[in-house]
Image 1 (cartoon, rainbow, N blue to C red):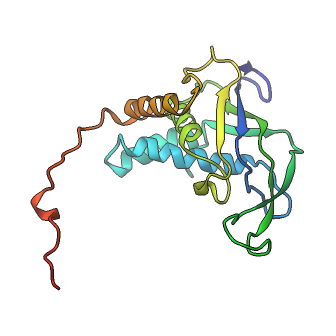
Image 2 (cartoon, rainbow, N blue to C red):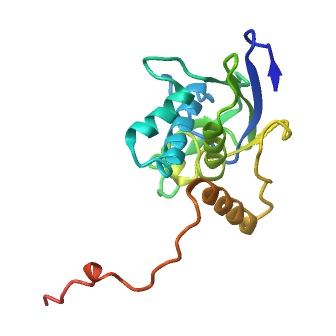
Length: 212
């Protein structure tokens, strides 16, 4: 981390954000793909709520923990997000590659993959990197993406700290089995151990009667 740079007393934590698949991310001009700090902040807020949501059953407590990271109308955010480079590599990709014709496939400008960005999480003077935010960052790296069609594996990301001594982080998975184990371990830490599956169907979920 860097201290006292970019503002007196702030601390800057550097992460490598690597795109594994092309990402449809842009601002108001959709023809100009860019990795935007606002988009990253939106993803972090989404995953932060997911992480806190499995631990807090009372909405007021959930929002209170969220406010300690991202602030509210009554107070500023404890962190800010920066991203570089400003001139990324771009190309056109089919958003709907399963369709038959080039026209129907909707070829759209996107950020190329693989390519890496310098993700900086900046804490305000006197503020440590919030544990909830760090957990959300890890869950996003393992399960999420960024941009349009991210639920169809566009915009898949991999995030690692540039200095692993600064923050507690998972070991990079070497394959599908280690990825599954790493994900399970992280989610267990977030939500607690999973209950064993109950193979007996409860009475109220029995199959409906045959009306034929």
